[in-house]
Structure formats: structure tokens, C-alpha cells
Image (cartoon, rainbow, N blue to C red; front, side):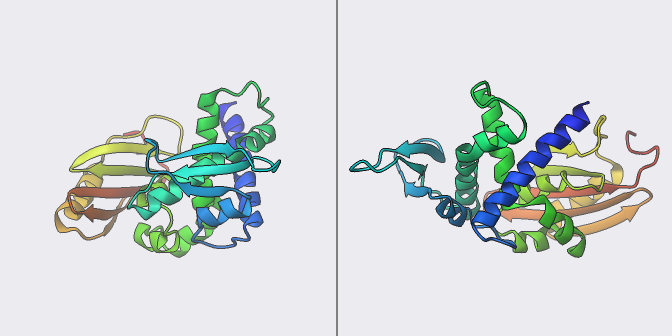
Length: 247
């Protein structure tokens, strides 16, 4: 029942993301969230005083003009963070459309559900699943090559979006030598880090170079996302189904 419900939920968000991209006449990556906002008639204004990265408001029009949907954006040196912030507030703006596609009464939708819809839609807007299903195999699921295509999305977002594609995979993110999160796109318990995954990760962590290794049912890729003061690695493990998935 949950699988069917999630498929309907996911399909509704994918459909809406496609409609938004069509409105902005964006047919291939990278997706500029600012261009999508403009196509939707939204204003993006810089607000240095607010605490959140961005906030969605409707500003009163002058001289009888209708209210204008507006995104108040806090300055941020990270290009991808600005893109995500705008994409998220676009999600807030059109959340009611997504809820209607899901058959949910917009008046009864909780703030938590609207926030989840906004986040999920932002990811689908910057990295559309239909595109990733094509670009992923073509790039051999190489995160760095995909980042060059989807340059408005962060490495982590692209990795998370891999979990929405059909291949059974585990995505693991390490920060400063510790696992930040580890998720799989197959129901059931996510297995512990395997010996192969650990070896591959250690090489990338210490050598700052991508590594790709396969053994038995596991195909492992790992990439460094190292910056001054921050060491992050992203590990992608593709699994061939056998009795080893939950070992």
C-alpha cells in the first residue's frame, strides 16, 4: 500500500516539476531556478536581514495592482545554496497544485506536509528524474560528470536524486571521516558499510581522487568533495540482487 501511495505522490511531483520547466522553456540541464521563478511571475529580492535562506511572501501591489508572489533571498556565497533556496520557495508557491494532484485538500494539508512537498519539488526541479534516468547511465553514474551537467544542484542533491532512479543503490555521505547519512532505494534494512565500500572510501578520503571498484554483487564508486575546512566524500554502491543485500 505504501509503495503505491509513494508512487502516486512521486508521480504528482514529477508531473508538476515538468510543467514548471515547460513554463520556463527549460528543456535540458542546468536548471536556473531564478529563470523558473521569473517565468512564474515571481519576484526574487535580496533581504540581508532575514535569518532563513529564503522566504516566500506575497507583497501588496501598488495602486490597485494584484499582490506579487515574492521570494526574499538572503545573500549566500554558495551558488548552489541560492539555487536551492529559490527552488524551495517556488515549491512553497505551487504546493497547492501538487496537493491537488495528490487528491489532498489544500485547506487540510499540514505545514509539515507542505514543507515536505516544497523540498521534494525543489529537488525534482533542479534534477528532474526523467533527465537523470538518461544522463546517469550515459555518464556511468559518475557524480562529477553529472555535477558538470546539473551545475545548479549540489553534489549531495544529485546523489540523493539517484535514489529515485530504478537501479538498486545505496548512497553514503561522509563528513570529516564520519558517516553523515546512508540510504537505499529498496525497502528493508540498509546494510552496514561493507569491507569493499570501506576500502574505497578510505582511499578517496586520503588521496582526494575518485575510485571505482567492483566485487561480487557490489559496484562501488566514491568521489571527493573537498573544500578548505571541509572534507566530504560521496559513496554510491550499486547492488546486484542476491542474498547479500541485507548482510
